[in-house]
Image (cartoon, rainbow, N blue to C red):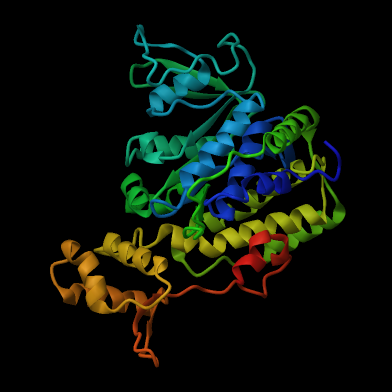
Length: 426
């Protein structure tokens, strides 16, 4: 891999003629690089290490092409030789058994519905790091909804780093599980409704969600009736670049003095955004940023994190955070939050105002009276989510979604690093 090769550029070239939004493709590329690297690269951080593993969930309405982006990334990673994918459906107990590499539970052989052989094809007692990549384009098919115990365990494994010990758990059947240096990457997809079904409102302050990056996008608007098969030559070039990174990137990454200076400023000055539901996320934002810096350096095959990598990572993260409140929608807020989400989804699709009677037609089956719709719209208006467009010369009036502009005063951000910035005119 030459110093001029950039995995992001190669991936965007591969996926440019698809319906999936660019932000979904960007985080797909980030996720597969993170899984590829696993625990073989890190940034020293006091007594511990920060690894590039990520918990990422794409969120959008049905038809926003989340699954297309996720499945294509998994396909390319598999072709590059990666094989430690998780089962498609699991429970906390079976997940731990899979990660350790055991095949039996209570003396009974487990079925192929969730069984994974030893992830490293080695002795289960070997002191070798274990890793797994959870890829679930329909995340609610992967685990039981509301399984807070499983969520908590995954949260604990996000930044697990004990070079001398093992992650230990005693299962319900009293079997003790010991996993050496577990590394977990998660890449899932969900709708607003599915997300609310998976996570109860009390999960907002729970550690698992603060470790998960929620990637939201409206549909791209592109309609491709007969998509062409991606160029085999371009796919081979990307896969070869992945394989070279896997071979080349090993050990601790270093940071330039300027990179450390910028990261220090960002750590000391970051104030978050106004949505209080992300308070727990704010406390881990700096770790998310460093993980992303590792990925940005690896995308160019660099073992040094410099100014460019920090700027790019911070810009990607800030751009993602701009849409995070939309990823949650009305989750965890008030009664009829699911209907409020539906209203926002309807307005997001429309390029023209929609009046009250038309909205009522679409949500009447979920509400008892039009007065409830009026209260929901008033609440969304007060929250700055929607706006009322007065009658114009052509007689059009009604409700429209509010699309906030990207902030221009944030430190160490260059929106021009993102291809879609100029394309979307934001």
